[in-house]
Length: 113
Image (tube, helix red, strand yellow):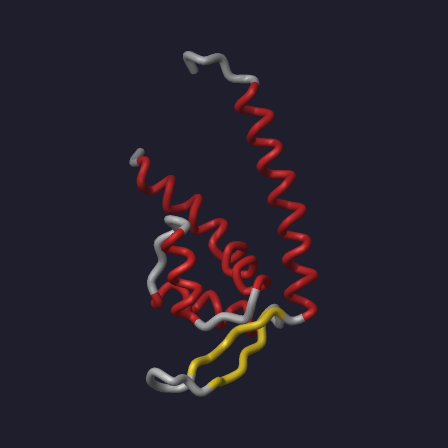
């Protein structure tokens, strides 16, 4: 089993959560989201991001608006809907429970394991 595959699956599992968390702080366009994900070492490309944003929008978690840009074409800014904020709160709680469970399991390991 390759460790890189496991790492990729772990990141993929939390990517949608991370996207919602980024947009919750401020309305963003795709390049800003990609930049922040890269800074966090959650490397992602546009080909991965856009389908996720579309799925979240179709689920009613996000909405968007177009804004003119001083540099190039108009930008699509994403924002959380009320449904998205509620969903993110649920994900926050699930994440907290998951990380606490993993920490509990890891505390039970002996150093040589």
